Image (cartoon, rainbow, N blue to C red; front, side):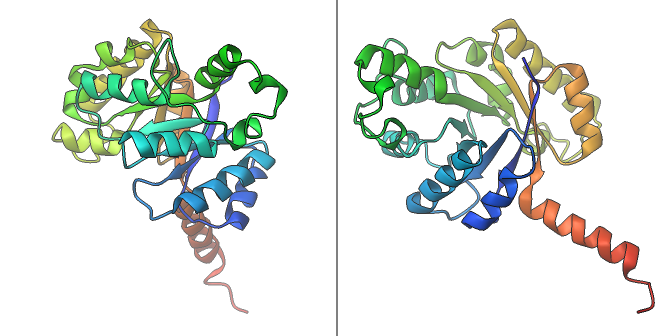
Length: 248
């Protein structure tokens, strides 16, 4: 499987999303956990990403059934779910996000299938199978509790992958933002092993190119590289650093 690259979408605005579709990235994570995007905005972002062949994932801050269904019906191709602490939580999420036989997702024709008019959605059985395949459910491992149960979480049918959040995980382990700590590295390698053992997708966040390269070499399927806002700031900081002392 091709190793994939993505980033977090924080800037907002269709123009910003259109810019990301020109980068060669594989996916973008629309962040509704740490941002104030409305469902209408999320719908526009998803459509813009799709038009540019960029997979639109959504990180959800609300794990209640109505919000999970809404994001999927808007067209999210994957849900990144933060702050997981128990196997029970993940099983409930599977029941919300997946159609039978994996879960109990509520059915309503939506825009992803042309409100039921698209050929692939005409047969309900194949429609449910395709939705289960294309709509990924990806819990985050960023708490001590999730780490302690990661083998069980990764083994749950309907879980498509695990997203490693090194920042919050390091804080939970008592080594805040110490990304080179042997404790954190061992924890991340444990998560990777759990994904590989259960043939689930492994995704990790990285704030630097060097760490991204390291985790790809270790076998992660995907790296989410930074935030669009951070990348924008850093690029202009580098510009000013390089040219700021030049006489004009």
